[in-house]
Length: 320
Length: 202
Image (cartoon, rainbow over all chains, first blue to last red; front, side, top):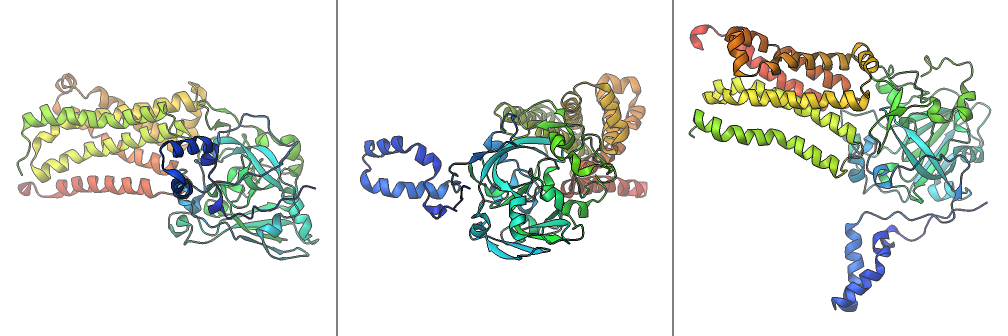
């Protein structure tokens, strides 16, 4: 098993990718303009302060058999079009408002019906897991979709490490609650905080359910849910909770944020389903970001062969 | 401060206002062409819709502003604002027809019948049609001032419909529709107060 070690270099020391790519030109330029050695040592620091923190790239990622063959949504769109209400209700807000979120150090609490509960550093959480690249479709409940190359590992691998007890039937998830860092949490017109989500244990243990720590081969941008988030590709995007601080296993179905906010519009299951409309808009079609025209939405977002079995005998209109 | 004369209003302010009203359209076209927006269709839909509403509310500001400032020549700007409101509403509906429904009548009809926010939005647009079509001197002469005015009172239910359409389309954050609803309430309130005063005081 390939092991992952968190890069030990502080992000402030890492040369921005753009600068790194342009190093030869930069060198030549520096010498030509006869700014000399002083400029060479000073300029990178000055430039770095103006660029957003560069994501460190992961080495030797495995390719997943679960990856989609669809063309990828460009990085610029994936990282600039985000529903992350902790940083504002407009999709362009998080890219700016999240840039100073402190993601290191980070800890994650595993609690409830597990044999080994506790609070662990992110390093300890990640250490035994092999990371792989997984290209998934993401379908938002609002009617748009993307194709994103995530970096992560199956949630099942993590849960098994902490040994769910026989009573565990559901998994609850919680996002960081820190109004000082998250301006959206100081906003009275938004959701109740902290953001909470949940899955049935069998959904959580499904091999498609991913804990992601990166996208496009690099550490997750803050606005995409750094440092660690859930990705459940057959459910509407709001189930894929970001910036996780707590995973709690329980016997009862946990409350979920959007369901609390509008129970008739957002269910606990929230499986992508073109046959069950949102009360206010159709779910039959979606617009892939970058396309002008809409395309048909597929049952379970195209993952029916893998996951439809989880719901046999259930009325998906009742359990929407 | 001296108010602009009727001639100045017509010859200088009106052309300027025309360009101002066109700016959102130009800016939006430029943004689309430069690929500024991650979801261009959503931006196009939202921006054309919001500008239609803003211009509609501006037409409703004309009368209260005339009473307030005695700048009566303002009336010569109202048609321009109203027709631009219709222009943006038309773009808004066209976007919906082409990119939401790909000209498919069945889908559009289903939306109009099944989704309350589309229903009121659609009715509001239908209501704007006779107003836009009669916004010229020939039609005013043809209908007669009183009939014309009665017809154009349709703008009040339309404005309320547009606000409802906006409010019901919002996912969670109702601040924007709330703001516009308060503005409309203010504009309607001013009219109600004016009407309820005894005539001798007007």
